[in-house]
Image (cartoon, rainbow, N blue to C red; front, side, top):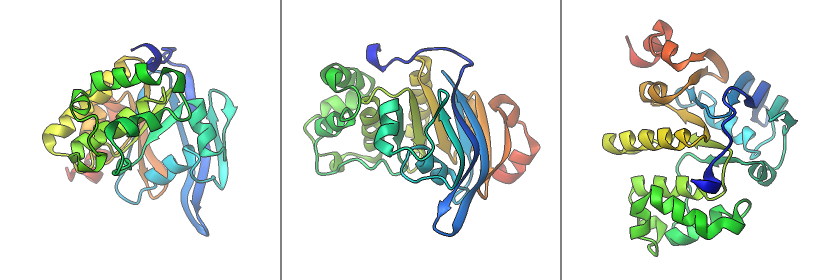
Length: 246
């Protein structure tokens, strides 16, 4: 995939959260979260609504500033760094709800993805993105707001890929999709990861996330309550009881 590739230094820690604390005003949401992601991994963050997953994403992405702890990216302290500077480092988030620009065309949405990174390879990367998502190429001039939910999610991920991410954060990518499109979405995530892209997958879809992830963390009330290899967590009785009712 050329410029969309990242290095494959399997096992080398890329991102590390140390005792991360965050919230809104006087309301504390994250209570000392520790988490790591290595190059080439898919790491899943699982939890129900209100667990603190999006708060963690938004602090990691520089949208909000933590109240305590550290965020390290390849050994560099990026705690409280501005969101545009976080993107410049290659940490790119596809937010929950897609947040595409509905009154702009597919092409314009994709071009905006390279505003901070990859601008000099914009045309080349557009070709790579539409090769991954042929349905977008068929509707290149169409307004993004007229796309189906699944197509909008493809566009949101494609826009993120335009910035040549080194770590791709996917916040609830399966939300609102049909079961068939959910399968397609998880297959796509695996394909991107096979190209060497590290992925932080934030999801409520527990079992399908664990089936493709290398490791996972389970969050409740702003704290990590379970973590480990995804293959181990699939059979964890506490996880089954909490999320599957078994």
